[in-house]
Image (cartoon, rainbow, N blue to C red; front, side, top):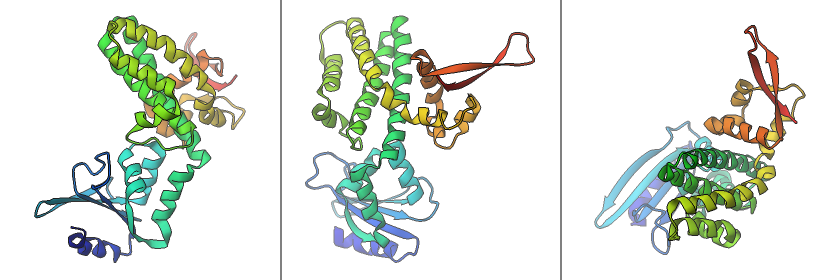
Length: 288
């Protein structure tokens, strides 16, 4: 079917806006990264495309999918880890067109994983981890065990991704397979949570205790990105300034729980500024 697809990608390659084209073939790939399609074409352009432009094709008993996406969106997905399929595609895809080595550079970026990108990604994963863990603990203390279970599963997933990033790799779709080799202790916690025959409340109780140590041991690296921004000026920050800071906007709703956690751990402190209201203060933040 690759021959059948050639006119489609040759037409895209002739466009001045196309930076590169990848072809991913289903055969010889263990995980179903092609989402059951026989071929996936990824066209990366320099246009401000919609988030993703998708077309499906069929030829006899074969299926193919075409994805057209802008480079700016690709770089954001790489930064935030919000489209893990893309990592798999870049790993496994064959470059069939590459203007000025744009795709080759993307592949190299994934292999090298620049330090600044790692620092931000660690911060994002740690913030998500803290939010899920905190919410799970509240549900557990209220004896809402199924909701606690749901949150602790997610928190373990973020902990696993954080461990992978700390080791200098991009988290892949098969993140637990990565963690099994990189940090067996986290894998064992996950395995015990889902396979243990203990009652759910007992499993959660033990897991919260074990997770607390693992989270605390990663606090320094997980908060480094936010600490660097907080220390970039002497004046304390308002929450509005932090939320709208260029790199911190990616933290979104996870920023406030992370700040509260950092106050609790004596990493940052609140600065109270008087308002016109009686005994009401503005709450600002700075490095302790």
